[in-house]
Length: 227
Image (cartoon, rainbow, N blue to C red):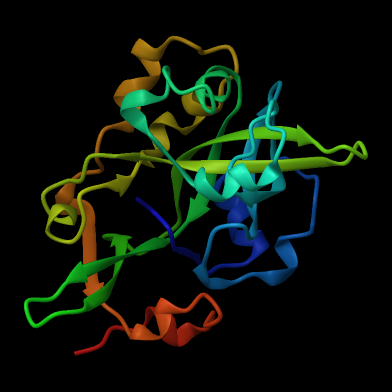
């Protein structure tokens, strides 16, 4: 499961890294940088319309277009890579609505021998921006209001992350980001291989303060290493 992550850069860096052509919503862009992102919050997500890459504000927790109650999104913050073609909530989005979720780390909680859990920050080795593989959908409410939402795909952990948790988010290599966004690519045999675990040698893990436990704490201290 991936239930917290960070995006500690500004809008300009996101646009440059992900070759964004158009910013279509500023709702979530005004609150960057972010040090402790939690489900139900709105975030900048990269989608593709035709040949145009757009940055769109979306709510974390996918609400399928057929849902009668939007609170279902609270339970759909993650989608297992192994069952994307089977689950009704994700099947159509896997075919038609894939997205990039910009991030620069995620948190997991490691069980301690002495009891309790220690929050750990997990980054790519260079500490830079990357993309989680995501799915999105558009839900229309009873008054006609449109809600755009997304989920983060998870996969089995690599050797390093396995020491902390039994799942990890699917981090995309930059070379396959355009393939992932391409709406004309729908073959699971082409898409599934890019969801393999990110290489362990390119991952860095370190302990951080327990202030991360509360999503109310969203400040630089969240990402500072502790002894």
